[in-house]
Image (cartoon, rainbow, N blue to C red; front, top):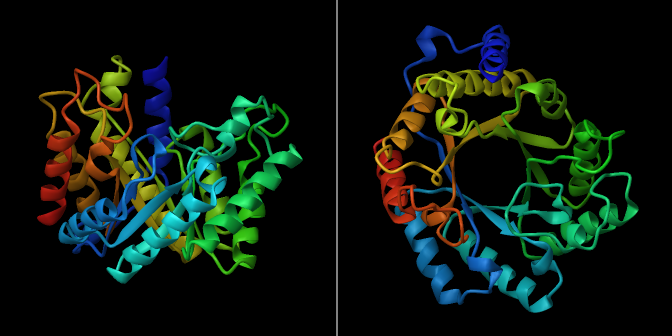
Length: 319
């Protein structure tokens, strides 16, 4: 059943505007984007941040998605530290985007959410969620960031608003705009929600869209042939590009550096090479040092975060 659904969805993607054959020669990468967060969200030293930033810039990264959690905005000392972090990153030439990581448990992330733990309804119909997100916006803006990276927004606790993400995104990208912040929106590579991409791309305060066609699908869903994952990536790259170009905004695609099985480290090369062949000029990786700072990301059967980080930086360097 799942394989049939995937095959049907890929066919739907195929009818969308795609890159011309003459466009398939990959241009040089214009942006390399990486997510950044610390172990269990314990404040690291600024010296460590400086070392990490040096490594990012040496690897050619141009943008950092800085994950800012509920715990961060609850403490002035943490916000002061983030302000220093943002300042140092910008001084080193990096563009910094703030990610509401797990905030309200309506955005993607592994940070955990006190809002969720307190039993609050995770839906835009809850006024407490509105208060939380606006507080997050104000706190994040105070650190000096210029852009918000709205990561995988999803209503989770309300049947009425289950598919209401577009109105939700419109509300808070407008709120960000009033604070002089740009908005980048990353939507899941979810075939059932493809219709949201054009709607979001055409919102007045959205400056960029993205998606994350992570794999390995065959390892998550054994009924799907392994060779299908590259087609999955190609179709999402073409679809996202066409949607963004029609709306006249920027776009990028994410690559995972975690959950790659031992012995299949070349998946990173395959993913990036596939994106480059489809004309993707902005590639993002989740995340810095292979997400080693999050316990449980790397399982015993996975390639080590260190190996994956070296692999992905080397692959990007030859792009």
